Length: 357
Image (cartoon, rainbow, N blue to C red; front, side, top):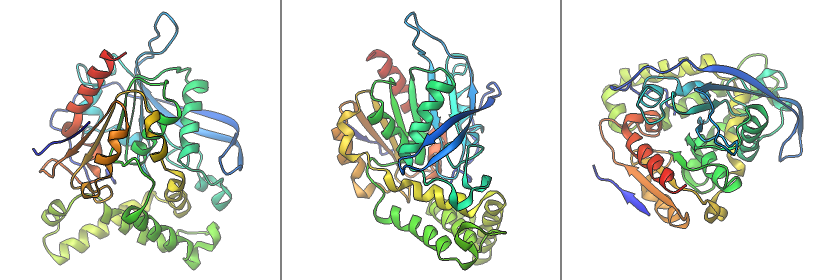
């Protein structure tokens, strides 16, 4: 069913007004030996960094019943959720994902955060991973690394939202519910492909990239940072923040400078190219559990006028879709990390999936 309510990139989100205390996450690393990628490349040791909050609980059959997997967006990491507007609105006592009840797992995807990535040393010799590889690695982390054999919920933002659709198709009996945020269940195409290609081409055609073996960051990383800033937020908020030419330039320069301090051209190139194998469209009927997809109307990356979510959600047997209207609370694509805007739908999903199991 599709319901529309009239009522990146997460870097510019505002703080939640109902934030609560939650336990500090524990961190760890799991190493997969001789991980083989879909490209047939192999990495002798694939390091997967993760954060967990809470404790797993098993039923009489030994199934973990309270594990929640939360997947981050392109260029991010599990750390992006440890912030007041997300964890502070969801993980506290009595909240939707109360860490006293749930075992919350926040992995860094391949090529991101503290997991194995090109900038660790292999540079452009790093295996060319895709979303399918990332999901397979997440599964290995859960089952082999953390001993989790069942998930109460898989949810994700942006790239993590796209991977949530793949989780539902590739492991349809492994979870009770799915919540993809800021994503579409179709391959990367149209404008969504174009902005990615702009960054990819800028880096690959940069003489200072040197085939990935640069000594210092190539100038194209600056172009990439500008494009990422452009695709985030929404027009009214941007105009409010930057009402003059001078303030616009100043805000852009500040945002780009901040991003440049923590970014690497090879890492970004690989992160964007990883979406090449994303195409959940052919197998949507395989998703068996309740799924609640939430997008926002001011999302430049996944604009509602395309009608893709409305069309494709009908193929998901227990699927529902929400498109949040533009409001003072939404932040364009970054709305996915402002939990106060959409957490009522998470609560609905948890209630409905509990009844259906």
